[in-house]
Image (cartoon, rainbow, N blue to C red):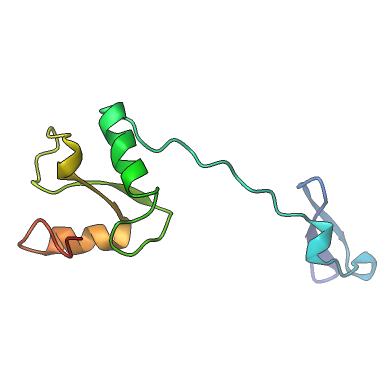
Length: 107
């Protein structure tokens, strides 16, 4: 298959073409589409929504905006009080789990 190349077409599909027909394309040929922010809260919807809005949909420890979810500071997953929720990313959440304290780097 050294004589063939896998390319992505402008409509997002993939196809195999002969290598000698391959042309160089630029990023302008494939405009980036912004994704809408998904609703990431579920269980106690209103409380989770307030916690995410308070955190501006970012990790409250490191400020990244992906792979975030609520951490229950007291460890009780049934306690959905806004002050008990801290929105954190996976990386920062591991710090909470590996710590003997439940609130690391409080702001």
